[in-house]
Length: 506
Image (cartoon, rainbow, N blue to C red; front, top):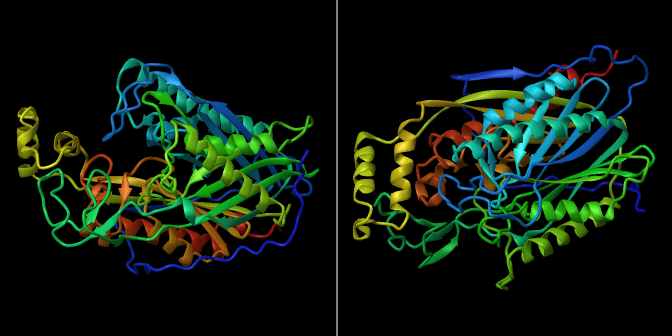
């Protein structure tokens, strides 16, 4: 069976455009530095880096609703492949960190907080040291209470419990380990789905407004000029192996929206699950260790489309298997060149940022009510999604004026991971990577709650699906520079060692 061997790591830091906003966003910001110390009861002695991983099934029952705020695939009718919560727990002897990827389209903060509460009762992990993120498969539940029936509420409760079980099992599996990180590039699967078009060529949006320059989802691209933004082709890897060289876990990160190609009502983990299973077939931890766990996270894919097929058509679920296995093979090739370490320091910093909500005006609310009262008269609709956005307008009207989002940064030696609850555009991710003081950085989106799409201000000005006000896109116009600036500030803080976790032991 395959063991993981060491070699020099030559992973360059990426460059990009989009400079950082220099403003200080002090108003409404509560910074929560996560200082960690020795866990009470932990035996004294030489510090040993440890890791553990586990996967727990979270597949919903038939009848649980798969609907989102915009898309309406209906209830679960069957299972193509099972869904999981996949957890990796790291421990450097004084700080513990958990990273959990969940096969869900999105996860509400309440579900994550309920899971953290259960985790805190059974492990030494502080709640603020647990990163919980959705993969964004579209063939799974949108766990933000779109469905409110008994089966839906039961699933939300079960999901929190199973996420906690995954972390608890991973914590119980902690064992001496070594860790490495690297990356490769895979641009052929990526395309920006937001297309800049000639002025006057983009039709009215669902609200009847004209003059938008970007055609994205649900809008024909009649006179395209170029992609409206960049993509990030980097596929990042965190590899963990046992002290005897046996593989323990691999965490991947890639900035593509999802794969798709489903059958209606059929549950699937999408290519995220295919990638994990492909690794698990090849990497055997051996009989002396718990099973190896493959994990794939979503990077900054808010403006990217599905994995590109090159124009070829596939049967349902076929392309995701091909793409997942291809990325797993390239991951396997990269593993052989990684340099593993066993004395890596961990650190975590989190903050909460208060942001405004783009609530509808009284005139917009009246428009929405009129549309929904006369929805049978399609001739009056400026767009085929007009009634959907009329309904979303009434939902947004019930939102508070401000919401608080949780931001997180994790240090694993000279690697940094930033996490945000939004569907983040690639240009934002590239800007964070460029501004990060760490040699290597990647971003996990849809983490620690759900904040909708996060278009930069210049993309808001261009319009398009990702900017249309709804429960899927509700944060203030300046949310992106505020979130980006705060994540970079957290990364700077970790790099400077202002959190106690980064200090050398006395």
